Image 1 (cartoon, rainbow, N blue to C red):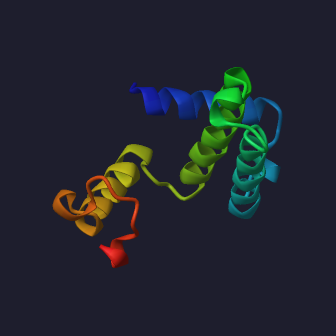
Image 2 (image 1 turned 90 degrees about the horizontal axis):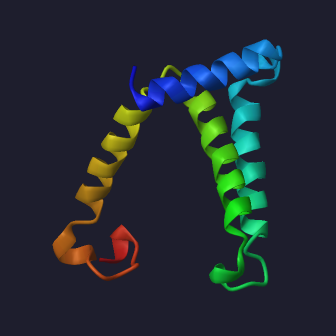
Image 3 (image 1 turned 30 degrees about the horizontal axis):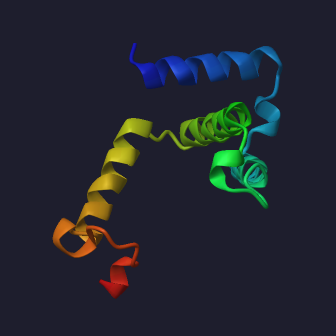
Length: 109
């Protein structure tokens, strides 16, 4: 079993033991990701990034990742595959020779 499968299996077991799958439809999982991302952003509000509490950042990031894994599972997505595909797509949109060292969007390169 690889790391991603272990994470997903542990999440699913945790969810199922609590009978929470009934709440984990794709829409609500997407909303939960957004809510948790807002909580992550709040840790940085009115602060320099160095002032954010690292333990709280870790907790909120874990929540985001957990809901993202569960959403991927709902659609039958292979997390490793979709992330690698997206990196490849981004590589085509942001070739090193044009994108290195700049934050410009691909249509401005």
